[in-house]
Image 1 (cartoon, rainbow, N blue to C red):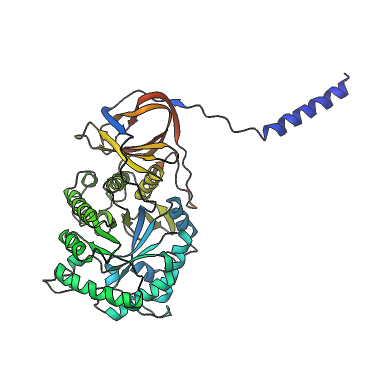
Image 2: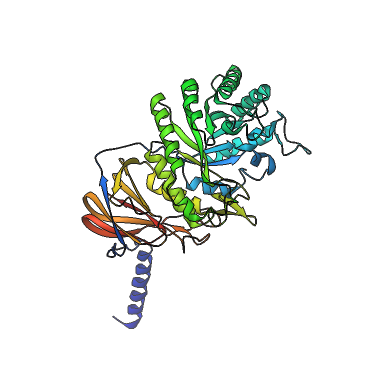
Amino acid sequence: MNKKWFLVLFFLLLFACRKESKTLPPPIQIPQKLPPANGLAVTVTIDQKNLGAVIPENFEGLSYETAILTQNPEVLNINDKVFIQLIKNLGPGLLRIGGDSSDEIFWTGNTRKTGTGKDSLTTSDIDRLAAFSSQTGWPVLFGLNFGSSNIGAAVSESEYAYGSLQNNLYALQVGNEPDVYQLYGLRSPNYSIDDYLGEFETYRLAIRSTVPSASFAGPGIAYDTDFIGSFADNESNNVSMLDAHYYVAGPATDPSITYKTILSYNWKLGNLFNVLTQNSNKFSLPFRITECNSIYGGGKAGVSDIFASALWALDLMWTIASDNGQGINFHGGTGLVYSPITTDNGVITARPEYYAMLAFKYASTGGTIISAANNQPGYNCSTYAAVNTVNNTTSVTLINKDDINNLSFTIQAGKTVSNIEIAWLTAPAITSTTGLTFAGGKVKADGTFVPAPTEYAVNQTSFVVNVPAGNAAVVTFK
């Protein structure tokens, strides 16, 4: 073969190789080996045989004050592409509109015009909310003004909300935290649950006369759990859901509150869940925590906005799911320290609690609760598990709330596991406000998020996962 033909053949082969290389599959990632134990030992026993509660697909949710609709038309707007993307990252959910301002803002029944005050709720505001709900796929739990004692306005407000939101109106709430109305001057000093029940029934009947298919939830209490039992006894046939609010502590001005406060056991939560669970089982009614966050009064800097709040939020979501709760709505809004999503200098930002919501969604989608008992109840850690019966995967969530000690979790899977994937929820420090990642990914400026968990080879019935102090991990295996 002469030199000319040799060069022609060489370039043809080179071109063919380059063309072929474009169609080659990506390189196979070889699973890593798990590092040896390097922390305090914790054994987690997974029970695959006894299935518990199914985790609802709309478990996660956000809660906002009614005032957010009247103060800024750019909020909860279908043109806010970043915010919509952040919500879509979480999958199905529930949006709650209410709070203290729902009892302070008055329904006009008219469109918003120049000069309409921020203390007035208009048809334009509800239409914007309806469009946002439709765009995100999140239905709305809508709080009515009960504080003004204006039944006619509440009926009109309900009728318009039902017509605008249509199938995306999840339920109506009559009043916000009626157990503290006497403290805020909305009712007489001796206002009681009996008084509320009488008023609730009057409102319910009036609204149903205009909107026969309207669904109701309640009682949305602040802390008085006696309201829950009495409300369920009297209204269980008239509501679709029981609900309550929960904050760890407050007010935010309390100097004794630190991040250790939210990472410690809270007896109020146990009592609340006991009452909700008892009445839920008694009347076959689902329950949900429809307003919740760490420190009431807008949150406390250095507590509600740091990575510790992500560990707290992840732990709380699993606690609610394990108690057969139907979900949680984290309260937020512009200027609130604890908000999962906020706006910083005009830029929409995902805060620590949002990363916790990503982690829960990643571990719980399609899941049914199974036992993940650990043998060290004295350690400040939590362990949870869920099985996806469709794709036969098990996810184990390991939360190390200890800010000093590393923990080595020996997971007894109950079957031989070949490979596992670990999605870490981590930050530079437990007090960090930035630099958070989940599953190796960060939320981008456009709101998108792509997880990239790390794969490890196991080939055993048990294996060790090290979780550093103040970190969490989601372990997934078949």
